[in-house]
Image 1 (cartoon, helix red, strand yellow):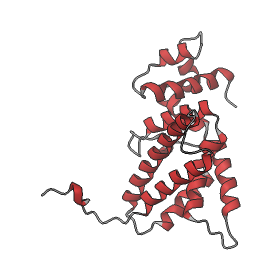
Image 2 (cartoon, helix red, strand yellow; image 1 turned 90 degrees about the vertical axis):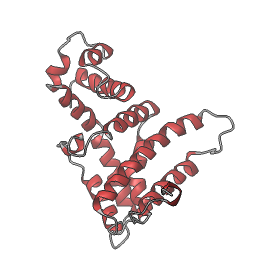
Image 3 (cartoon, rainbow, N blue to C red; image 1 turned 180 degrees about the vertical axis):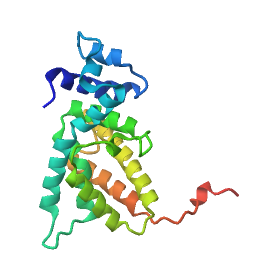
Image 4 (cartoon, rainbow, N blue to C red; image 1 turned 90 degrees about the horizontal axis):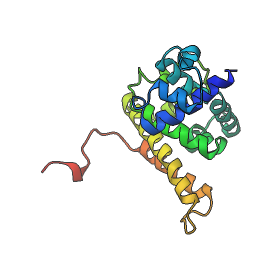
Length: 215
């Protein structure tokens, strides 16, 4: 279990990185916003800025993977089959269901910033936190969409993540509207997951969408 000061630094960094961008905030600003007296607190706990970014990314993985595993276990039929809608719910919905509003916003903004990284530079490529449920979901989705080139599926999963993180923000807006079109979260999230599924299921042809084609 990280020290209390380290946890405060990670939570503060997640929020500030999300709000200002990874390169838009200094370690000194993070330390100050976290209320730390020691100006070298980040170096003490994490070594470098990259070490802090990795720690922030790793921070929520255990809880996310536990929730994903519970969903997977509940979804599996007698033949160990899990449908695409169930896999997408297991992948994304723990963020909406397990995190409070503050954590959702901070996590979504930070994660969206990380989508700007190349795959080899993303903290996911370097994490040492076990994610058996996440890996299982990814493998099962790849099997369902085996007709897509691997690189295309990777791109679409990144787009799906951006769509979902944007939906978290949209739901917070809708939740405070008196005349919101969605009275409960269930139909809203159902449409979000259906949109993600449609994005993934779209056949890949390499052709240009007609309205975008040059005449």
